[in-house]
Length: 263
Image 1 (cartoon, rainbow, N blue to C red):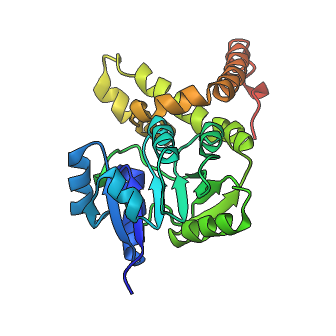
Image 2: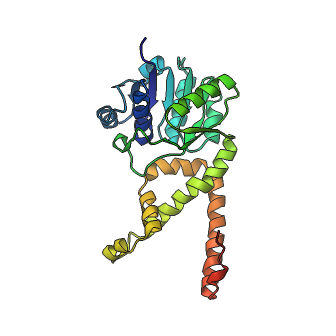
Image 3: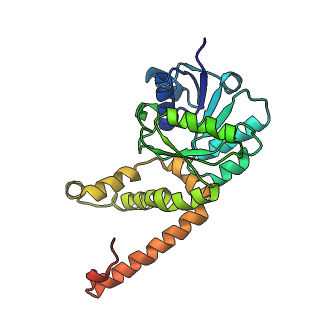
């Protein structure tokens, strides 16, 4: 019996990590990417068996994963709506779900999803077969119990823990738990670039600063559409945090550090 075929659109760190784990599970993995170098690196890294054109991938795949940046996912959904697709399951891996879920309603095989895993590094050379091990992988119910079960089985096969959640609630919560921390880290890291005593600055960074600087190195080309599509939620969280920071600054100036809220 021939191996089942997984098609991956976008062979960056997330897509290539999916491919690595799927190949270890016995899938034949086809990849497509707008960057030829990414495809070749994905093949060399063992993330895909072969490159394919989008049409060939759409025709061959039993399961299709859209692992591009968010705007790319929305573009691919539009392309898929205009042609027959043989896949029994289509997933995405974007970090915002309301826009994706709404766009994907016209695809009967589609389940909007989001793995809570990643890296500040980009490209297939940053991929790991164990990237999703033990991580939450959120998905928005399609309304079909059979299709949702296919999604849960596939997600579980990658080592992740599937979590069903409403699209709007997902976006509200990740604005607080993922998108705001990334925004703060990006701003914090960028605030350090004009430090004249860079050597001492590096030496005096504690664990929290090192982690924020690590996150601040994440590709903003990837994060910009996420922040744009979830702007209302992220802006609300950013303003709420700004209020708390200003209140803390006022308390410090009054000599009342002990009044700063803590856990």
